[in-house]
Amino acid sequence: MITARAGFRFVDLFAGIGGFHAAASALGGTGVYANEIDPYAAAVYTRNWGLPALGDIVPATADGVMEVPSHDLLTAGFPCQPFSKSGFQRGMDEARGTLFWNICRILEERQPAVVLLENVRNLAGPRHAHEWDVIIRSLRELGYRVSSTPAVFSPHLLPPWLGGRPQVRERVFIAATYVGGLQDVPVGPVVRNRAVGDWDPMGWDVERDLLLPADDPVEEESLRLTAEETRWIDAWDDLVQHLRKRMARLPGFPIWADEFRQVDELVVDDTIPAWKADFLRKNARLYTDHRGVIDAWLARWDGLDGFPPSRRKLEWQAQDEKRLWHTVMHFRPSGIRAKRATYLPALVAITQTSIIGRERRRISTREAARLQGLPSQFDFGAQRAALTYKQLGNGVNVGVAYYVLRQHVLRDEELIAKRAPRLVDAVLSAPANPDVVLERHRPEARAS
Image 1: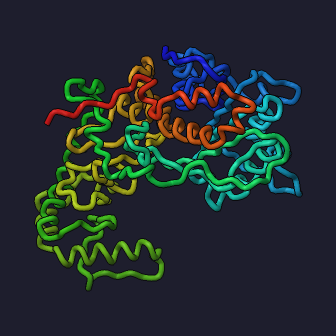
Image 2 (image 1 turned 180 degrees about the vertical axis):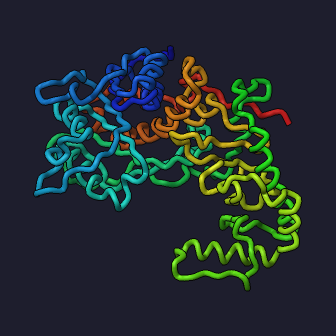
């Protein structure tokens, strides 16, 4: 079990496996309540943080009921449900029947000094404008000072010395401070969606900053690529190398092996969507300009015989990289996607696990946990790897949560100190990097 310094009190709602708990405890907080309805995630949470987590927030916060104890900080990676648009209801009333209303019930009764909510990037998009408006109005009606401008941030924008990680994972954070009364005073977002200080996100190196050291071998043999997967990559790597001899940079559009034909043979009618017609024309031009190389490549690989449709496509996003085997890859329904080995796409709650080309394997569960900023001693027990990847894909990044919370408290220090001086004291005395507290060390340089 992971232990931390005692300090301010926090509750962790829709807690998952405890990304917010890691951040809050690293700042000096003590968890007094956690809630997670998924039994597997709740078991991992309790295993690591020693706080019972399994439960349903709805009966725990129903009318006339309040099982959540008093606290200084409320965190929640809450699910976003559509709110009713009927009538002219306002804020908290309109949120009734959704899980956000249960958060509001807690805020109404306990009035914690600080609230930190996290959700997917799309919550701040045009399709969810109504939901966003209800959330912000509800918090203001409950006496919270909160920005109406979304605070979007990603771990790859944080330098490693502030707990950043090589992962593009844009999430929306809603940070609010209790001041009492109806709040309409304008305030900006606590963070901006850009790199911190003079940090250049292209400075990340997945092999150096993420993978286990060479003397700490990966345990999961299932991470190794199969012979079939290796053949798919070998074939496309062959084409990449031959095209690179003729092109300074490979095309950024999807390369579709099944659509290779000369420009004068291409027929595009009005029934084909514009986006697809554009790709067909670009593939025809690529084939026409490099027909000799492509035909010889197809002959060497038997026309990609036996390759499933999704492996007959390559999405090259690796700029001037020389080989496919030097990139980070994902096997996607849309094709094999290749990116430079700087930072990874967001972990997701499905099995599109990143493949490290030079290692010829997928990232391990331990490396995925590292990518989310969890401490090295974090323990998933004996559960299936697929379940661990899912939990990590659903989780909040520790470094980002720590940074956003710390920046919010530092900005609203005087307001927060009136209600939760221990929270302010803890943040002022905490290091800038949560890894220092969580005893999380950066991996050593890998052996060449």
